[in-house]
Length: 325
Ligand code: DP6
Image 1: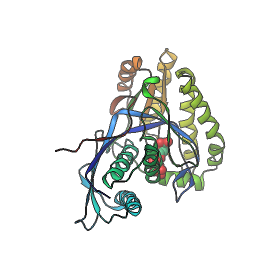
Image 2: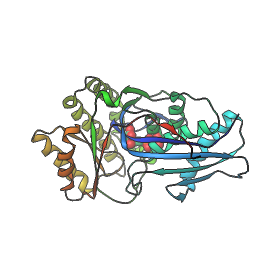
Image 3: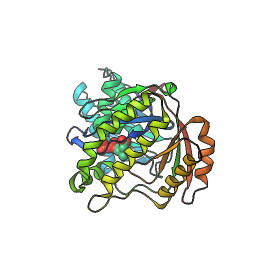
């Protein structure tokens, strides 16, 4: 099979209906269905160059040579593709994000989606978007969703994500308030395991998340932000409730997190459609209409504890980009 250098771009996504918990650890299958919005402004670019002369895979992430767990996750994906193609070539992988990863914004989703697309192409494996999504999912389940633009679902117990609505069919925006610097303390994979093993509320999360996902999907298909927004807030807070009830508690909120949530409620009381969601970190992502972005952004910049604010519209599919000549 022919091997060549390949470069792919994929965008980060933020879940409107959250994934938290695994049905099967070995295959990394989520225990609950999730639904996300792919973001235009947050992007990973990943280049994979197979090279028969290399003795080991070389991985550089955001300018630093990868080691330990982050190297392992990349090598595992390369091994999976090599096992399929019969190739023995190691690869040089260079990946970078155009958003600050040190600030703790989710980068694994866009990174692994770009890696999955670049790797299948570099090793000459014929792969549909659904195959690429399944490959990305095995590395990090949220990455399955970054293979597609717009609104994307990943159902529980299935291999690949599925597009739900294109970005232009319901153009919403996200205003992201960064409320802490430095990498997050406990990663998602570890945080999920801790919640599954110790939180008495995990069972309640599992029992309620699927119905909430269906409500979110229905409100989205109706393009009804007034209905969608409160459900999105509930999904995030229900997930955080399961984390907070773990032993010891998993608290991802910083003081600024609660202040931003409060400010968003005040904006809403004054008539702006804006809704908060938080992942396994302290930052608040605010879902709103494109016409309200400027007002929401300036409101959030004025909140104590907010270090920076970034704005994004809905983003496109993961894609290959031409190699430099
Ligand atoms: C809170 O996809 O990072 O962002 O599959 O273990 O790699 P692994 O977890 P990951 O979890 C994301 C969790 C979340 C919610 C979401 O994106 O749905």
